[in-house]
Image (cartoon, rainbow over all chains, first blue to last red; front, side, top):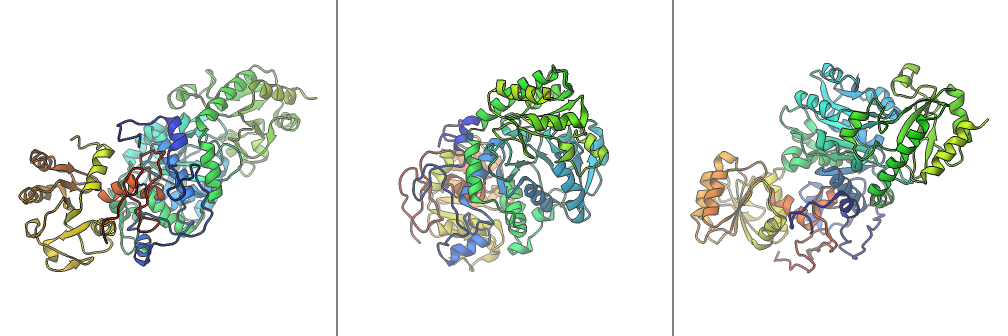
Length: 431
Length: 182
């Protein structure tokens, strides 16, 4: 126990390798075993009853929890500075479970207009069919968040670095509005990862991730996670019945009273995950938590490469503009220096003077970049959002989300930057 | 003792040492946090004594309920208090009148009374406030990690099975802990 016993807080690199992963208690296996099992034997009948009644900590069934997944959960909670976490099947599943825990039909949540296109779709369509009504606000106009608050507001949702436009959101300013409204601030920290930014330090109450991206880091597993900051008082206004009222599902237990500052993560697990069912495969949890061990190394290389590529692109005659907050000339550079001082991430958008056709030409002629609908792989990735990830949005929404017809999105990998730049030159100059 | 932040060694020392715990303010209802904590430590071999004047003479989980600490006919190592902060002082005064003195006075999550704590510490009694011993035991034994909770502990030593099944862990470091009874 090197942590609190010695009154010493381990650094980020140490936590990335060790948090959550003590040697296996049964076999001594040093790597985290993949507990590829649906269910766990109870010690006795009384133990089973205690587990089902939430009176003991332990494993029942992999839809509710699994020791391999738990390693991933504790690791991400530690890296984000949260009290607890819950891993689920995807980033989208994380958002469903969070909102289902916070909102009842007819309630509202405020969301930034500058979000991943998939989240915009989820909020506008799937969530509306559940009666959870999104109210959009503009992160470039902080007052629009305050203006959007109503008695029905139950949460505010933003991304730390927005995908794909390279928008850095002023987390602290929006956190103050959330606190004034007494609703939790949810931050999707997928593009930044806790290596670059820890939203809890700036006022986030809940952090969500698509683990699929930089945390897993190798493009091999879909996953999502919910981190409880332990900062929100769920009982104050009696607005969150899943947390502050006796739960009929568990013979009248009040989760906030029973579980204190990790009650939200418990509620997401024993109500949301148990009843909605988007469990993460232990095999994916193993791959993702192995990936996280090298997160600090990878993320710094991603950022260093991305800055070199953005600087090079900005000097090219074929390029109209580069949106990357790491560039000193970028609109969001000041916010980047505050929120992501080690680097502005790996994702950028590039506007091509040749418009839609130039975008298609670039995507078609690169040889190192992979044309895929993903970001956050070790490999460099490229996509034309207007015809793919953001296709379902209206033209106005596309432009608003930073995905107009002339825009190409790049996710810069950890290859040699000279090779990445040479490949882009090939694509830009192809006849 | 700094009551804002306790060293893990202090908490582990307490939970490893105390064998008899009197719980003041325990509820007989199985959905209440006090009942959870009582049951949890009973299952881990602690001698648990319920104290609640409204339940005098009844049993909770097979243990006889006493009205007051003074009525308990045996030595108590730790007094665990489930009463609101403003009602804590008389309970602590009562605990400090016990012979022999308890080693530890523990106040549950959200409960803190610095005046009562000073009184106990002046008498040489260890104090923990605003913590749950079940959560602390779960955290330090690694059991709580199964729930995705940040235990704030790192170790290259394996967690120790308590020896009464697969899913009950102990607080020992690198050696098997003896299950202490039932």
